[in-house]
Amino acid sequence: MKQLILFGAILVLLISTVGCKKLLTFGVMTDCQYSNKDNLGNRLYRESKNKLWDAVHYFNYNNSNSLNYVIHLGDLIDAKFESFQPVKSINGGLKMPVYNVLGNHDYFVDDKYKENLYKTLNMPAPYYDFKVKKWRFIVLDGNDISLHAHPKSSPKTKAAEAYYKNLTVPSGKWNGAIGVTQLNWLQYKLKSAEKNKENVIIFCHYPVYSQKRKKVWYTNNPHLHELWNAAEILKVIDHHPCVKAWINGHYHDGGYA
Image (cartoon, rainbow, N blue to C red; front, side, top):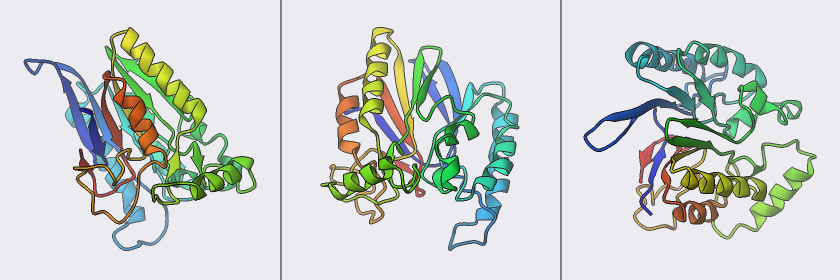
């Protein structure tokens, strides 16, 4: 497998051809996790607004003429629905298109908000795709099957509990999985991209490399972050050479493989 797997961080990516001719650029942010509450260890929740503003300012004034878009890879908030408004307002100051990915903390809101949470972030759907030049960007929803994305009394939550109990690879309850319908959609999009000779980058909140795989840079990390069905997803993208990278948040230390 030759795809790039990238975790966390705030960065600008340059997708280049031979001779360093710039094809496109986009900015990546993740895990802002704003909330109006006291600090917890090294998590400085109230300071997230200022850090987000610094990132927006950087993208606007250092890259506004070259960035095709900016994407936030999930966990825009830490908890509570009212936390969205101030950070959405800051993100709204970006001078280029803005895309969002759903993270687990984005669902740490009252049950009544969960079904249409993607609309709060101006997303067309929980998972979707868009195209820039000859690149197809696919946004996945790793909360599809999870213990947090649906009301507690929902059959989907009950099904997720059973799914988690049957996992054969250890994983945190704060993670999730990509369901059959979304997985079929992903395969359709990848086949379509190959037919149209498009390169693909996949965005998701969660890492997809299992700790059981060899030569993974965070093998000794005791804090498990991967998608519950990471191995299944890897099998799919391994069959599609059009996929050039998987870029995610969730793992706060950052890194790549």
